[in-house]
Amino acid sequence: MNSLLHHSFLKTVFSSLAIAIVTSSLSSVTIAATQPLDNHPKGEIAASSETAHNPWSGTRLIVAISVDQFSSDLFSEYRGRFRSGMKQLQNGVVYPMAYHSHAATETCPGHSVLLTGDHPARTGIIANNWYDFSVKRADKKVYCSEDPSLSADPQNYQPSVHYLKVPTLGDRMKKANPHSRVISVAGKDRAAIMMGGHMTDQIWFWSDNAYKTLADHKGEMPATVKTVNEQVTRLMQQDEAPVMPSVCADHASALKIGNNRIIGLAPASRKAGDFKTFRVTPDYDRTTTDIAIGLIDELKLGHGNAPDLLTVSLSATDAVGHAYGTEGAEMCSQMAGLDDNIARIIAALDSNGVPYVLVLTADHGGQDVPERAKLRGVETAQRVDPALSPDQLSLRLAERFQLSHNQPLFFANEPQGDWYINRNLPDQTKAQLIQAAKSELSNHPQVAAVFTASELTHIPYPTRSPELWNLAERAKASFDPLRSGDLIVLLKPRVTPIAKPVSYVATHGSAWDYDRRVPIIFYTPHASGFEQPMPVETVDIMPSLAALLQIPLRKGEVDGRCLDLDPTEATTCPVK
Image (cartoon, rainbow, N blue to C red; front, side, top):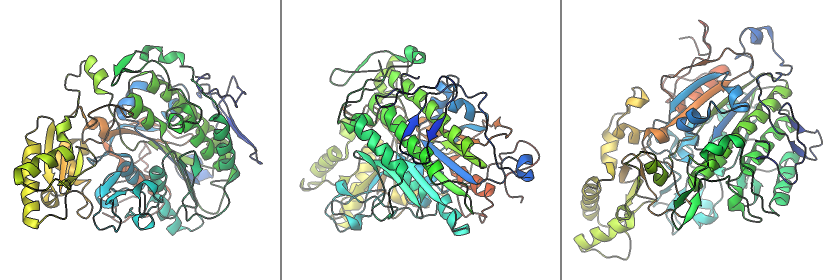
């Protein structure tokens, strides 16, 4: 594991405890190797007598961590292998199978849920991208974390919280006490924006070749961020191939995919100047973590006149999953890096000296490449039929209805998800095409269900336990009548919506449990932990944290509910 995190500019290795040293001048950020944290000292926690009796009370700092694409399946596979931070967290309250109940299991919808307590149907974040025919630019596709009024080109957008309809925990904290600070750090702008919300004090995310902030955020860049960006610049001047941890030897197996591409044998290598390869190496999450722990110290989080919130989204697991799948040496090495990064965050929080609560979860799950899954006995694993592409279906229907081929009849990002009818067609033609498309798609052997917007509008909002929701209810939880498509297409299980593997070989976004289920872990030092295997929802995170901070929520104000984190007769939730 130490070799995995060894870098040309980081030579110091500590053979015992995992610590992150961030000097007051922050002239450098030193990254240390990690040993198991079973006997890690907790530091001096500023606890009142009430806090000593109830370790969940008196919280001064909430740290919410999302590990992008960290499914319950990955957690189950690796939880016995973790030796550092992820092992430490398992002393807390563990929900191994929590549900993103909605069907649109993508990064933006998932992150919009975590700290709002609402499903995408209420957050308004129905996908990473959708079509908005009311925008005044030529390309009607919009990105979930942009303000389309600020850019004519969606490829050159201004990151913005514009589309998020509801408040986050950070917004509620600042409304309760303006002295609360909300700091958001992530590998992706959409993750930082959706977790931080409308009132972030500082927000930092990876963009192109450095960590940057929103255009309307003023103020000097913190020393921590400057230092990390300088380190990345030096790092990217040379190639590096991380050494695979010895514990990952059993995951190293060559798999030929696409155009004779071989995956599965070793951790991803970094190429000098190629920032796409940066995102699939341990450097990506490590530098995001460096910023998070540096800001804890530099900003003295939790030491002010009101509780603070730090949100952290670690994006490399998702990048590795897309590029290599979930079951090779690449993902095993990534899990070792995650273990180390969580250990460093815990060490920084313990050293910070204020009562804190850390929650770790994920924005969605993911599945392995179908080629490897099929070799391992999953006979239904397959790639999507190219005939299911919106462009192909548009051509077939244009022939049938004798319509022009100048414009597609339907617009969609991929076969799975929201499909939009061309708004330039006559209303009667649109209605006929929607029904014709639904009929043809529904008859395809790879399609599980197709719903029209009208059908989803009239489906009652689901209220039962999330593992019992049918496909219509899962789609309903992602459905916004002002933003969703005219058709919502759900593929059958194990159908990967990538017809031809190129840069992406695996993905997520389905309505099935391998994409919906993620772990949730609540941790605070000295608390009595327990595991609760019964289903809960990711929308339950925000109400549970709000209760710890004594921020009241009206009945029905959010979709989630408070989870009681105390295993005794006491409760961490409001008494009814």
